[in-house]
Structure formats: structure tokens, C-alpha cells
Length: 137
Image 1: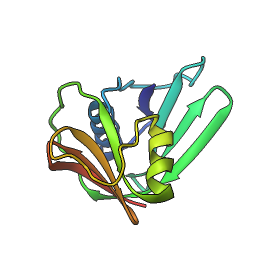
Image 2: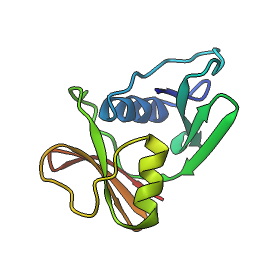
Image 3: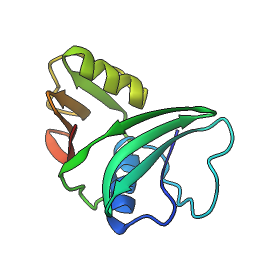
Image 4: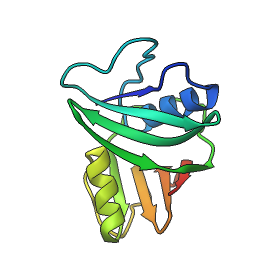
């Protein structure tokens, strides 16, 4: 899976795409005028008026979309590689785990590790108990 932006992205969209790629230990690709070819899965950050507003997951001819608003701006630091997991309850947590192709570990998030915490209307990207960025959905 690769993370990229739409063509001619804003600096906020690029920053979010890099932070997401770093959090998920996925490569960020500066796409420019390249197409999204091949059998590779792409997470494309889309924007609205210069702000990140959603993700489109593309695999071949298939596409899924998730819309959001940033609630916590991404940290500019790169994170060391690590496996992320999804924690939360209900259908939303399961949907997020499937979207990012990650393991769902249930309702209780461990204090250590890289966790995508899914709660009603919010998703927090936590690293060792500290929020790196958050989304309102």
C-alpha cells in the first residue's frame, strides 16, 4: 500500500499524507503528474479548500472513500517503523480496520504501541499513548 495526494496538493494535504504514511509505516509517494497505475493499493488524500478532507483507497478499478475533518493537526516528526492496530467497538472500528487493512484488537487499547482508536464520530491516531493526529468523521 502507498500513500499519496491528489495532483497539485496544498501543504496541509502533503503534511497529512506524510504523517499518515509515517504512522502506518507506508511509503509516501510524491505523485506529480503520474497516474495511479498497476495492481498496487493507493491511499489518496483528497482535500477541500486546501484542507485534507478524505481518503480514497484505490486497488485496480475498485475505490472506497472515507470523508473526515482534522481535529488534531499532524505532528511533523517522522515515526520509527511500527505496526499499527485498530481498537474500538462496533461496526465503525471494524470498517476502519478493513479500510486500512489492519488488525482489530477490540475495545481496550493498550497503553503502548501504535493504535488507531475509533470512537463515535472520531478517530485518534495514538503512538505510545500520545495522540499524533485525529479525525472527525
